[in-house]
Length: 571
Image: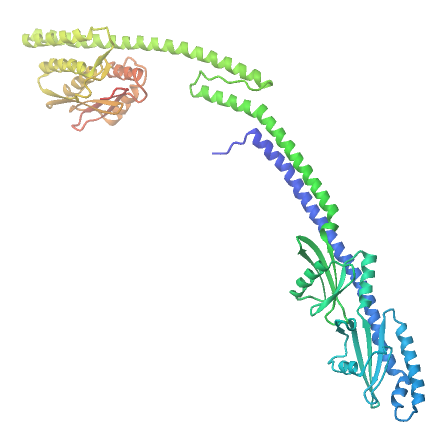
């Protein structure tokens, strides 16, 4: 069965069909905007980090070249090789010139740095840092690689710095050149980067403390370092992480000159995306307000239109089921008020008309029942008088007397007009009188009556069983050559009662029986006998649907006629 959708549901579906695509389109557009902004942030951050890294790499490359320049300086090599031949004064003078040269070379870099040259053979140290000792040189020579190494600050000692040494072996003359710069140089660059680009950069190494500028948020950096330590970082990348219930965009790039060190920058997404978020919230708020207004309009339409329509539908269904007393209550004051008032007037007029027709129908039915009963009485009287005439002609005085006695008892019963109904027991007495009369005339059948005592007090229309018995005698027993048997039985089940009259006569064919059963429901014509038709019609008029006569073949081969009716009486 197809589902019917009323106007209110259609309005809700229409609102949903309008809002859902708009919300979906805006959601998609908002997500695209967020993705574009994130991509822009990543691109901008990547460019800043690349620029910062290129500047740092340039400074590191310059410092790396200092070692090569120092190792190739003739004055330095001459000084390192003249320790056996030159006088002390000459060596002091050469040393002063070399120190000035190293200082000038160190000053060409924007980073604060220190240059140290050491000769393992002569144990001579020339450096821009006068505090360097043989111990520092020995520690330096223990390193396995000649790359930039990070030396963290010691408590109460030197500051953190990066150091790289170059070991030169040329013409069997060894030189060790160290270039060192403080981590403060990177801190200063990070601070400048943070000031000019509004960034939050820091230098990160998985096995060292991060290098940060002075005014950074140490708590966030600590969380970021903990997250980065758990990851396997690529040379460069970008991630979205959540710290303290806030999302951050983290970008990083690896240094080519400083092994294992990454330049990391983070930015809070909520602050960057706040204009888009405010716009999104404003749109969703407007959509919610529009939805509330639309639902209010739909509810108003429901109360003003749908409810009156449902009332009218309920009223029409009530009229259809026969409830003509139904009236609608007017709860709206609009155009439906006129329809509801007119419907009530129409229902009242229909009720009055139905009541008038029903009363007329009852009167007509009573007249029809009286007319049918009047048709049965002359028919039976004609048959009885015809029998008496025949018996008198034959000189059968006893049969005439018995017929007259039973006929008198019959008419004493039939002429009582104070009631149209009789008990089954009274009807059975009448049938017994009739069968005694017919048995006197035919003398080749007997009858059996098996009506339960519980049914004998039930009331049925007068002269309903006798026509069925008469039909069994005339059309069953009389037309059969064998000895006849007529049985009258009854049974009750709840409010349904049955009396069966059957004989062992010739019976009827199935086609003839079906045709007769069909004719019982049709108006009587000249070709149809009136006895069982009258009984069937009287039962139909008097009782509920399903009442009437039912024809069947009896077990003894004749015809079985079942009189069925439904009443509130229980047998």
